[in-house]
Length: 450
Image (cartoon, rainbow, N blue to C red; front, side, top):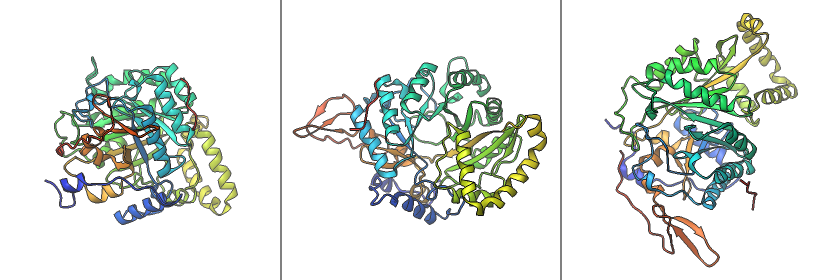
């Protein structure tokens, strides 16, 4: 049943992309206003405080080398030609104009590694050159250690390997069996200055395996920094039946805690609307996990006070040093910091001694995307996960609900004499903008700045 709070088909169809901000700080202020209107503003809220947007998806291809049973791409996606490199660059520039430096840009697809290597490296490099943070979202099939080294040289900060049983990889039927593939990807990245993320789509068949995935990540915490769970949504071309109503953000969080062997506070550091995303962090000491965000008030105070500090996930120890330097320069927070640290150290003292003082961390994220026919107004208008299109930025769930309306539009190619338009299905060039209007169905060498 569709809620009275959901958008109508007409509202989805006419939804407009974000206008360009009027000033440098306008995006942050706008994000704060939107999350306040939704009723989720506090010192514990990152949106509108630390950043104006959680991340922006940059789709550089619609092609893929897997046929997942749950997929947000459309049936027509496989026929769409890759965007010209110049068009991708213009979209990167548009992201920058909206959000500025330190924006997390997810280079995704389809499968982004299917683009020519020189083009992929150039895209990563251009995101980096503009001072933003490039993340590669990949199924890992085409990723090698040598490619990772080149990507890091180009400026790659994070890599997210999507591995789960919806992908129907030959010979693997459970998430535990897929740990063999995850281990191969870990070996590719081991020792490199790269934050490694594993993403998993949660659906009926693997819900009970979430604890096992957490245990695997904990056992490889020397490389794995984050595990992200994306709950199945009815959108795109996937053939998987609708998920069991018992699979909710709350029950997924419980499964994560079961695997972690400890309670985790997912309310201390909010990342936008809590119905959309939840975030928790643990410290690992002597193979045991401890909740890092157990003191909600302290985390909110520190998060708000240090909102201006950038946290480089590739070099966590350097980030910690920068935080400690800030602490020394801001003595009014020292007492609260010492009190919090003292409690934490006392709690982990036995494991800290056993591990000879070694402490590592791991983060857990849950994304709850909306069904195409059930987009809620407040969640859409306080969205922290957007996608860049030809015409601008849109909430990801809006884009997925009518993907063909965006990916089948002609791409502008500026010429000396006049503007031409590249057709998405045949790659041809036209002097007229032949718009595609589908019926809405809710169902290397690196470049340099010019």
